[in-house]
Length: 89
Image (cartoon, rainbow, N blue to C red):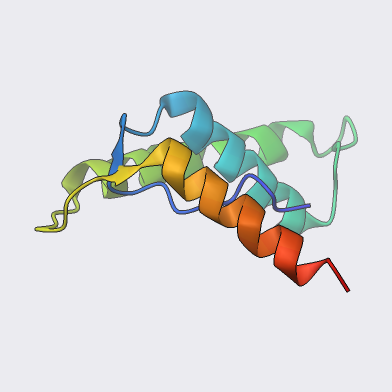
């Protein structure tokens, strides 16, 4: 359920608002236990997604590092290789 929750800091090209929103949505889904909220919970659900998106954007824009930016394509390839090894059994 949380596949979109990934490290979003220090990448080249920089993390997009869409990626931050997708991670926030997955976080709210995980915490609430709901993939799709009922009509009664819809406003609270999406308000939480928006709040977490805003907080994450603020965090990512204010963090500092001396480390070189990671290449998104290389990191995805490493993750795929780890998954292949992990599930090869």
